[in-house]
Image 1 (cartoon, rainbow, N blue to C red):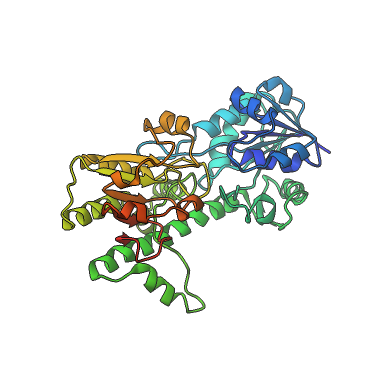
Image 2: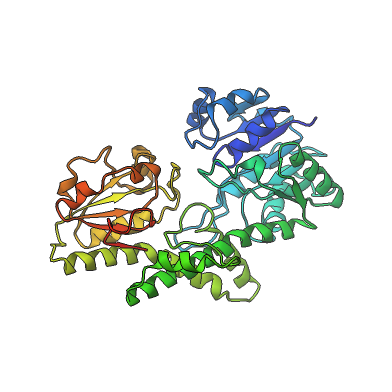
Amino acid sequence: MKTIAVIGLGYVGLPLAVEFGKIRNVIGFEIKQDRIDELLRGHDSTLETTDEDLKEAIHLSYTTNIEEIRPVQIYIIAVPTPTDKNNRPDLTPLIKASETVGKVLKDGDIVIYESTVYPGATEEDCVPVLERFSGKKMNQHFYVGYSPERINPGDKVHTLTTIKKVTSGSTPEIGVEVDELYRQIIKAGTHLATSIKVAEAAKVIENSQRDINIAFVNELSKIFNLMGIDTLEVLEAAGTKWNFLPFRPGLVGGHCIGVDPFYLAQKAQEVGYHPEIILAGRRLNDSMGSYVATEMVKLMVKAGKPVKGSKSLMLGITFKENCPDIRNTRALDIYHELRDYDIDVDIYDPWASPAEVMHEYGVAIVSEINNPEKYNSVVLAVAHDEFKALDFNDFKKNGAIIYDVKSILPKEIVDARL
């Protein structure tokens, strides 16, 4: 069997390399030596792959040396596709990875992209880089595939092998080969798309659709709050109909849902269409952190509590529950908005790395909750299991205002919830 190189060993690349590494030769390529060192010690700090899974990947090796991936026949690129400060697609990691592969590309090789992009990015942005650095032409000397990742960080039920995989290739024959490759590890099966652009479009609308649905219930939450109606009770009642979609209000961050719609919007504008619903959903979802903080301050004022100089505790900084991933976390919006009111905010999150939070956002987090009675307000921003076990009566002893963003606490304990 052909040897595989997985370029990028993050949340997406590592699980992929591990599953293939259980049955065939795989080289994991990563530019960060400390990440390689961690994996060689048998542990994945993202927690997407267990220590046992790493041990079972007996055909997997790691390297930062480009020369060690030169003999490979199949390259799978799984690097981040973020947005810049203006929410424009940033293809820098993808272009750099393409440059790396282009330098070692040989006749007959296949390059498969897993990163989420807008329709056309693989063939219009990545392939020219491969051709320039290799001196070769697609479909004459080398071939390309696209199989978008569907990793859901922290989800131990819907994992790589249990989620159906979309596949595609630059020729019908390569599409079949790419599809057969993934069938070796994907228990849920595959879907061979008719073209790379179809596969790219399918991926980017998955998260755009979810983003819009969440924006809808976030808007409902704002409306029902003004009407004095509990949103969760409304959703539970509406959910008794068989075809009602069970979305919940909340913060929308992370590397997918909060980013992918901008990729689709950018491409739409390039072809002359200004997307309205997609960008409206993004604006609304990005406003929720500020909304939560403002509502918290209103509750404090109504309760006669001081705002300026008060002490607040924010529970959670990761972008979702039971996961150490802090990429594009919108919980940070709550923190900054509260700070703008001159509120002193402590952040506690047993899942997040304090060093990583400081490096990425310049914010310190506390290692434990000392003296719960000192807090005037508490915001439950992330639904970690550890927070469900807290005794919130300890905070209520001093009359703290409690805002439950995730609606996981008993209604009688909280002062407000989305």
